Amino acid sequence: MIANLRLKTLLILVLSVFCSWQAMVQAAQADRSKTIRLATTTSTENSGLLRSLLPRFTSDTGYKVHVIAVGTGKALRMGRDGDVDVVLVHAPAAENKFVASGYGKQRHPVMYNDFVILGPANDPAAIASASNAADALRRIANQSAIFVSRGDDSGTHKKERGLWKSAQLKPKGSWYREAGQGMGKVIQIADELRGYTIADRGTWIAYSNKTKLKLLFQGDSVLHNPYGIIAVNPGRYPDLNHTGAEALIKWMTSEAGQRLIGDFKIAEFQLFTPSAHKVAGMSSTQ
Amino acid sequence: MENLLLTTQQALGLLLSGNSELWTIIGISFRVSCIAILIAVVPAVLTAFALSYARFTGRRLLISLFNTLLSIPAVVIGLTFYVLLSRQGPLGDLHLLFTQSAMIIGQIALCFPILVAMGHSAFQSADKRAWETARTLGAGPVYALLTVMREVRFGLLAALLAGFGRIIAEVGASMMLGGNILHYTRNIPTAIALETSKGEFAQGIALGLVLLLMAFVLNASLNYFQGKGQVVA
Image 1 (cartoon, rainbow over the protein chains, first blue to last red):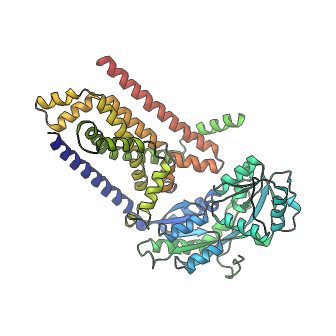
Image 2: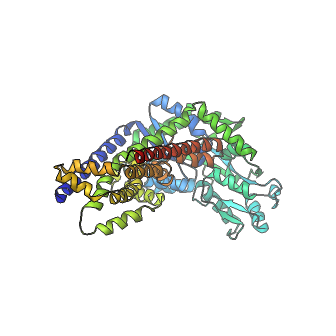
Image 3: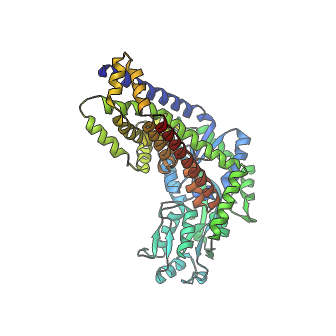
């Protein structure tokens, strides 16, 4: 009796699991050719840029874009693993390596802005008068003023580590806090702790009216922040939506796309400068 | 304090004005979690029943296993299925990562142990004679199972609500498996996480209010049904 029931139970169990699995797989694969998966950095998403651009792209081409906003390191990792079709990131050295190792097809410059150093209004480490970015960091370290690092291998974090290196310092100690969070969150943390942090200008502008932090240092050419878009290599993953990825790249670097990027403003501030049509090599400051 | 009041006020405004963005997120949350619990509930109840009524080796081990799984963190479920569903993983060819289906799978895995463990204790509380009586009176196994289920319906309902409560409010697995994609895999918890990181507290609080309200409605209805059961029985 019980044995009989157990057999039926097992049968129903296996069947229902199988059916629901099939349904889910089908649902997920139904419109894959019409959707593009874009792994990108928190700065393009949190600043609102993509939300203003992508609806236009969708109405122009019919593709829907699924944006997964993570740090640059993670985004490149997703591209390497073939979990996304295309990446839009900001760490030229890592991007070039990504392409050179055969994971990406080609890096297309899209736009740039720059990094800025933020801190509390009273500026205890007096970085506002620093002669360059490395000097600013050195002053923060000398004062042991609180510095909040992204700590998440994002483009901003890579840049920050590069800056510490060029200042010949190894940040360590209770003043150096690794948050492991996105740009917006790190600005909030730095604000609460009355510490310093490095942010891309786009996110800074988007947050400037939500924080008491002040922009204290900017303008050093090492703070240049170029963004590139790369389609994941179709040779490696032939079944990715490569046509869609190419369409997105073409649109982002087209005149119309570039104009929209240049026109994107928050409170009259332009966040990104389009750069697809500049001479290649300009952006390779790293 | 003033800030909190103001954001709560804005949050209510957002909800009541029918902000379509907000309601899309709420819709996705309920859709995903409802599908997950509906898929999980039948095998879970059958498993719970088998654990209470059938005798087989490894039964006790299975029971402790499900009880252990009760406390597994959502991020661990998320990470496990991320690795499985990623292109580099064994199920990579299905292309499920960053889809609603991936979220559903994660949520099934999250609520299944709750349904089984709570369902098991519900079945255990039932009078074993209910099953025997039904069988002696000539009921088939399915009908007899339904009879027992009727006996313990409140326990099963509580299991269902607890399972639903866990998955509708969990952020770790949804974030990892869904990717927090706008209009697609952004649900209430991942949206709260994102809006908070963007400094948009009003949106976060509005969504939090929805979760709170839902928890209240679920618990109130459970209480109502239980109360009714007591009077009738």
